[in-house]
Length: 116
Image (cartoon, rainbow, N blue to C red; front, side, top):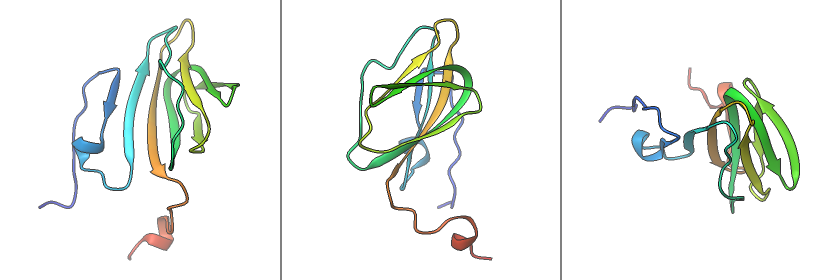
């Protein structure tokens, strides 16, 4: 068995990589909303925080009733209990990556977790 997974993705509105990469500690999805569209529901999580990377376009994110403008290059972390929903700008699509991980589970990172 190899110590890595590799996958090429298609151009779909939503791609979840959990099963495709056999992820064990995170969920990663690639999402694209056309101009004027939104995620059709507001949601929160029991345990998972979400990290969003806006990779193209612009829009707004509603978090606990507050509207935040986002554009390509922005990163956003949202706590599990926060209620959230994404909207594309009226005249532009928005494409973003969402990384879901269990809140407060990171015990080591970069140099503290590396074996050199």
